[in-house]
Image (cartoon, one colour):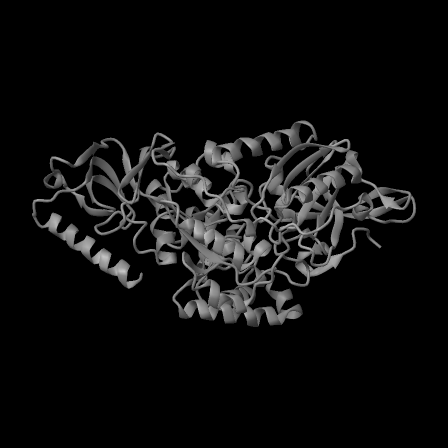
Length: 604
């Protein structure tokens, strides 16, 4: 907080004291007779809440604070909670600007977002992340960024649009709205990074040490790490970190015991909360370091299911009390991030409040943000003007169109054993397969009867022009192909399909659009959507329009291409995540994540 902000807050606080101590001033708003959810004590009890300006005056008996101009709202029978916090998410995964994500999430009670612009950082470097930080100034909710310390995550295994390292931290960590370093994926595969690229660890420690010197947060990323490897990861973050990549009860127990803040992920396609929460519900572990986060949410889910209220609802269904589940989206993350003004209903805190009509189902009836009623019955009551990004973040695709032969997998003989990534529904972990496929004119062919589809990753930044190729099982396509420039984390163009021709058509459409999504069938494009901002986000549509468009595209992938998995775009996008086991695809080839090496698509 700068000196001007401190002076302003001092004046505001003095006015609050005057109101409380009997001056002729009153509260601006009082919520009367609500069931207050006290996340400090894990209690629910009857009380009023008085608000003045953007602050909470008092929680208790507030009848003396109601004056002739006070807006008194009777909330008897309803539950009053602090506004919800999503502690780890990526705007890019929703394909929405911050403004449009906020448009969809605020009505369901989410008032604070902590986002990792890792995706636009990979595509555009500091330029993209600063552009996102600039947009934060235009939205009414509380939004903060934690930036990557390294891109790409696996320098020897993939190509990003921009290489970020410790040299960029001084600039980024002193930019507005940035509060720390995001998920430390560069040291996720601890053993192999230490053996193969130890210089990465040195650089990460330089970044995290600098962040800690500024009292900033550093998020971890430790999938399947235990013992010495987990300890080394924690130390690299500076000794205090989170992890949102925990997928088993055993991992959850280990991380809680080692002091890691357990970000229990429950997004659109990655659903790990029910397994992680067993450490609390079955082993009785303290939940103070348990935090609910989405990581990746699609617009359709935000609009039709809700946001953090939906994740809390699912957590309650796992046997957690409502008050404890709400702690996991309020005081627990506020404590981790050091956000002293939110997450609690108490005097002097910002008046960010969710009014809940059904506690078990987490139906949010009203939302107060900074002392203003901003949403009622699922409808936003305030205007959010559409935000347009500057042209300099709309030129991330820098390659020429490709030929069909560029995608072909060369092979000899009449049949060969091919390697295939196995899609696991609702996870970013994958399986691995080796299956026989036929060879025609020196090219390995897909086998639709065995769900052996083609997959490729095309480098789009003009920094090598490489194309990784392999097979994939799990989509069940019967025809066509679909491609997108959303491919975690380096966000090259990823494509899967039943034949090389449709894959080429889909990829070239994405290139022509300067980033986006394309679906092809029998040699022509049958659906498309531009994503001009970094090849990841659209600022051309509002949140509701994006939700409808994505639903339309995915319906076509299901209906016309025969896809059998839900949210196919997001499932495809994670098949290039080189830090998440087991096999993935990048522009450099098929990646054996566990062994930190590139495999040929054909077993030799």
